[in-house]
Image 1 (tube, rainbow over the protein chains, first blue to last red):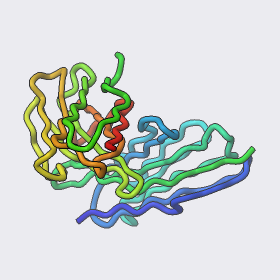
Image 2: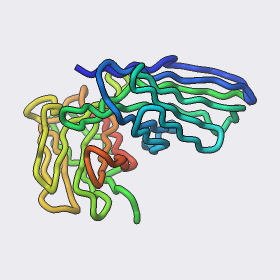
Image 3: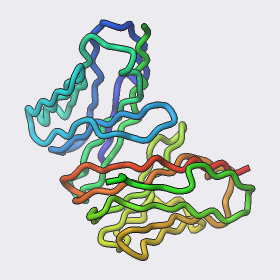
Length: 111
Length: 114
């Protein structure tokens, strides 16, 4: 059974700081997604990482994938308040291509 | 494209009533997914369709839940009878290809069963 664990589950930080969210998964997969959800809103796709060593960047967010370590990171650089949201990672289950979701990391960035 | 469309956006009903949630996927997408999101259980996949055919309904919690996709542009999720524990946000998502493409989510339906 594929399990996806995110940490931390909750993060409060100051604007201007850097931080990293971690996503670990338990079995082989070579495809991972990061989504963002604002309070009371839907989920918005941020990144899809397709291979070992993949790195994607959008503004102050950078995601990477290490399939050997079964680890993805979402790095936030010089955080700003607008990045406050819940961030989910989701891993593709190789046997049936189903997405297995992490519990989400609630990020609060204080001005 | 308008994206995935869901209706209603909010539904408040009493226990025992029938509830029908509706979804219109993005045009041209072959896969449609129904999810449920709660604080306690997070995001759960209920069922998904490929080319209007249900492929995996193992996430449907019990027989009170049913889903249909009569054509490529419309799907319903029905709960009959509804119970308070069904209160959640229900999302519909669609993708062009299950294995390799991103799932695009609708705005969700917030269901409250009193």
